[in-house]
Amino acid sequence: MKKLFYTLLLISVVFTGCKELKKEKNTSSKKGISIDSTTVRKHLYTLASDEMNGRRAGTEGIEKAAQYIEKEFERIGLKKYDTLSTYRQNFTYKNMNMFNVMGVLEGKSKKDEFVIVSAHYDHLGAKKEGEGDLIYNGANDDASGVTGVLALAEYFAKKGNERSILFVAFTAEEMGLVGSRYFGKGIDPEKFVAGINLEMIGKTPDTGPKTAWLTGFERSDFGKIIQKNLEGTGYKLYPDPYKKFNLFFRSDNASLARLGVPSHTFSTTPIDRDKDYHQPSDEAETLDISVITETIKAVAKGTESIISGKDTPTRVVIEENNK
Image 1 (cartoon, rainbow, N blue to C red):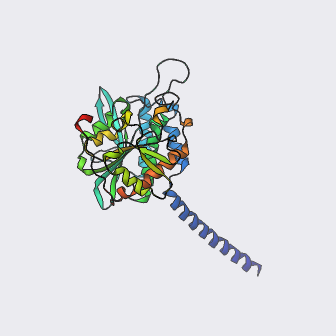
Image 2: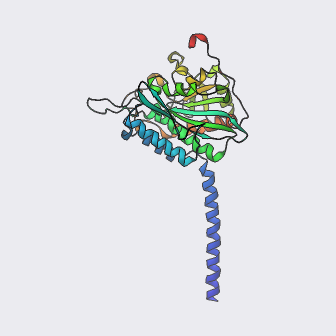
């Protein structure tokens, strides 16, 4: 009788354990498509670490950053873009070897229509001499944006996408949009339906928590689509409040926008009074992980109908005097 009791007990434990394991797997699966702050912190602190030495284009520091991004693309399962045999798009600029890092999630029903998700992974490098902190870590500018690109790549890889998504870390933005300009010369812009660029998303904007602003809001209906998709989420998107800075043309979205692609930049930073902008003090510790995480979630939700092929933003028209 005792033997029978223990046998039944063992069966019960095994059955319960299997149920719990199945439940845990289902929960993990659901959590798998979320964007969590732990992953965000890991990407940010790695890319903005002193080991990267400011990620200046043409240096060992940016090589380390590129290798990190490549490993993440491979882990996530992104494919190589077009005819590239690696994740790098190599080119030469002023006798320097440079490379954009890019990977693709192929679409299902609209494979030949591309949405580009981008950020620049270069920064200013380090001072050659002086006292104190000599490294321009570029945490907000733009390790925060690259963190968003990596997080979104993982999110959509598990969620699915009807249109193809090209995830790109552009080089040499700080030298004049060099990487994105090179990329733009080799594409058919008609195949690109939207550009989602992330720049400096690590600080709370003047519009308050759970808000971001978009450059060139009035130049297409891209922003209105995002606003519509964010209704009821508690997150709001506003037009760029810093028109005098001409920010629409100062980030990598401009290289595609000049070709007619509705390409815009998301940002959260109050740029007019940011004391860390282009300073060695732009460290990961100065940023708010929750701001970055919530913004990435908002971008994922806001662009969902574009990724699925339901919405197609109107093309951008660049006036002659803005060229």
